[in-house]
Length: 102
Image (cartoon, rainbow, N blue to C red; front, side, top):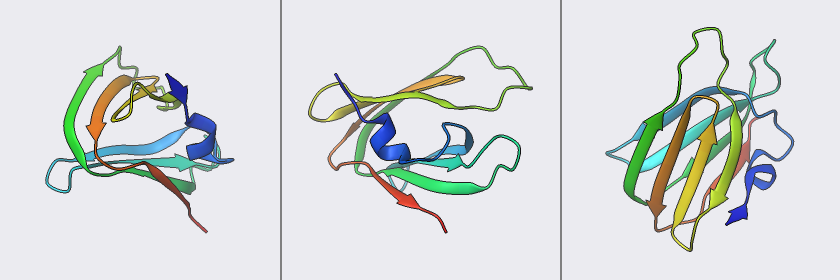
């Protein structure tokens, strides 16, 4: 298992303004913010070429701001995205990439 969390967040906080799965585009998009007070999107992380997607929801707390706990390669084609609210396992053909928002 290879941890790529800090590489993908690249200085952004682990807090998320959104986590979206688009089954038609076959991609997952995470929107990381600068801090939980301002909630300004500073980093967008995209996982493209998804061939399999599974998600399990943890306990939902309406007061909780979702945040990344870890993003790990499980093998050459599978990634686990663990947040405060959910765990997502994806199989993909590409590599994830992050983009800083200015």
